[in-house]
Amino acid sequence: MVEHFKEFERGCQVSEQGTKLQPQLANAWFRHRRVLALAGKHQEAVEALEKGWHISPAGGYLQSVPGLVWLGESYQVLGDVGASKRSWEAACEGCQELRAFTVVFMYLNHK
Image (cartoon, rainbow, N blue to C red; front, side):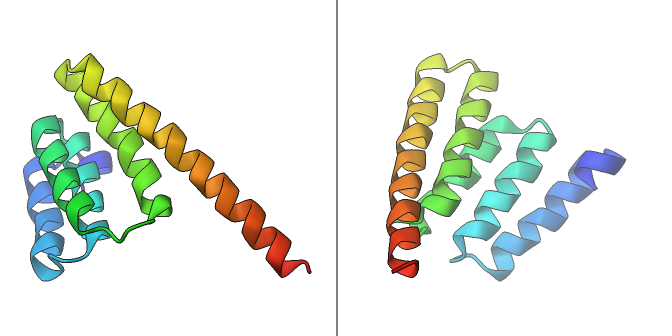
């Protein structure tokens, strides 16, 4: 709705319903953040991402890395260069963790 039809308010309302139906599901908050960012509501997007972040499982690199990239984008739009840079650096660290996990996983499955 937001990306293709430019129905920003309606899209944000529909997306928000996901967070109300599944308030303890980090991915619901991460997806809502994306809708808010597409609608140009970057401060609200940061807040939604932070809510998702606090309930995401430890070691959830698959979710956290894209979230950190999106957070960096939103902070950049908001003009907070320092927070943007920190988010992107954390995303890079998360990528390294994912890479290490993948190497171990591949090794164990090929033994």
